[in-house]
Image (tube, rainbow, N blue to C red; front, side, top):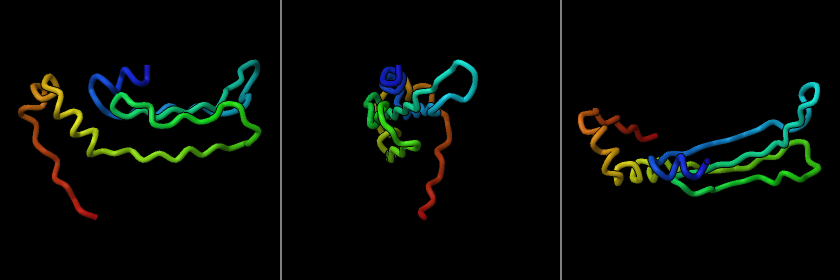
Length: 89
């Protein structure tokens, strides 16, 4: 599901779930997934004794833009849209 959604149209998908039992009978596994342009870039370990897990990921917005511009059906829908000016920081 994560890979297919970004593979067709480009973009990134971030899924993060809390860890522990927030209520009555529910237990959250604390899983997280990051997918970009149809490639799963990061998945954290589900079985661990740590309370907090940090999974650093860098989203490459230029590659997402390039991926979307290479898709011909996406180009037809964005033909008359203004470009966003870039600001160097």
